[in-house]
Amino acid sequence: MIIRQFLSWTRDASIDRRAEAAAALTRAYLYGGLDAGAARDARSAILALLDDPAPAVRRALAQACAGCATAPRPLVVALAGDQPDIAALVLRRSSVLTDADLVDGIAVGCETTRTAIAGRLGLSHAVSGAMAEIGGVPSLTALVRNRSAGITTGSLLRMVERHGDDAGLRNALTIRADLPLEVRQAVTARVAASLSAFAVASGWLTPARGERASREALERSTLEVSAGADGADLARLVSHLRIRGQLNAGLILRAILSGRMAFAEAALSDLTGLKADRVAGLMHDPSASGFAALHRRAGLPAVLLPAFVAALSAWREADLQAEPGQAKPGSATLSRRMIERALTACETMPLAEAQSVMALLARYEAEAAREESRVAAKAMEAKASRETRTRMQILDVEWRLAQQLVSQRPAQPTPLALQPIRIDTVVERGRTVEAVLDSLSDGLMASVREAKAQVRPLAAAPIDLTGHDLVTIDVPSIVVSQPEFDVVPDPVRIDVGMSPTREVDAVLDAIPDALIASYRADRDRMRLAA
Image 1 (cartoon, rainbow, N blue to C red):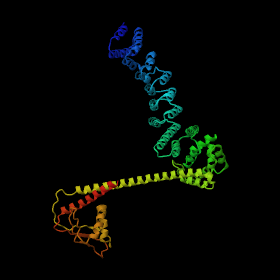
Image 2: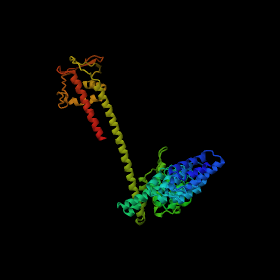
Image 3: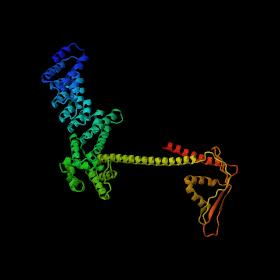
Image 4: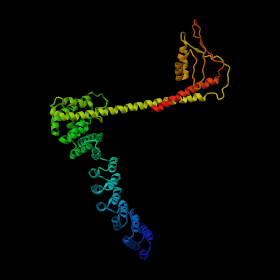
């Protein structure tokens, strides 16, 4: 009776009131614990509300039932086929929908509904595969960012193949933690192709140079991607490269010249069908006939055989000469030593055959030299930065010491009767005044040594610091008295006389101001240099 009255009321009520009543009725049916008769009537009333022309009413139904696992399947399926903003509510959250429903929603839906499906928790591999084949960039980006979605390597490669030119999708792929090596390499290939196309379109490179630059950049990035990968991952990567036509002799030669022997072994194993350990054994003895047979079986050009043999021999010699615990040859960059050996081996070949090989090796040599210079420049820059920081720290310490000297001056200087300053110390026989001053300078720190070196040439004249707001200090005499024939060293007395017209406060004000000016000048100069 109440449900029938509700349906009669909905004919004349406003849209907002109908939407509010539809949500309340749906929640009462799903969570209210109605008896069998009331539940049956409520279900019929809810399904009847699907025909309401107002989208707000249907949206209220979708919001009320999207998170409920016991919602009526006809209701959820009908809402999943509604207009995109309503369908997205149930496609994103409802557990009533099956994989078949989701695949159908991908096939007939738009990017709004596909993006909603891509964000579902625990998305299956089948649904992800359908999305990879049909979805656009927004839905594929949402799918890649969904960490709970199961996505196969084939689906990821299909995404790169269809929409690899989109930077947002590439970024989402590269930050995915479980991204396979072959997918990462495919993303790198699309980036290299995009950069090459941009350079050619801008007129910076000719099409031929752009293609070569793209190929060499792709080879470098492929070796970087393979760094640290285990045998299974390397096997999948080289298989992917072979299928794509990117596993060529130039890439294998670059891997050997870079010391990436694991990649070279996996590549030769894939091309020849031999086991990886067998290939590794043949590569460790390149001068024997077994490696030449391996080279032919892999389908590599015969003109490259001398370069392969020379590079592997240089690598083998460096490996044998390495001390225990020392890093073995092999780095992220090309080895100039191995390249030079390969160039030397190709010099005896006929020019017509060796021309292309030597040109390739010359480019490798130039690339290795640039990389070494780049590394050296970074090392020098880091060293200069460390030295600058050290000098700044020293200046900071000196500045703090100068501030402490200033703060220790008497607040109200009091004129004192001039008395000789007596410094008693035990000095071995034969030591001069310079030795005494050197021993005293340890207590007065390094700044006194610098002051003494500056004052020593001007000992015969008064110190004139005109223009610096300082005073002139007259030092009329320095007398050192010491017995000459006593066996036991006697104390040395140094009498320093000062002009009776100068007060102590003037002398104290002069010295800190000079130190402070010096420290400030040094500090400003070092900051400008940094």
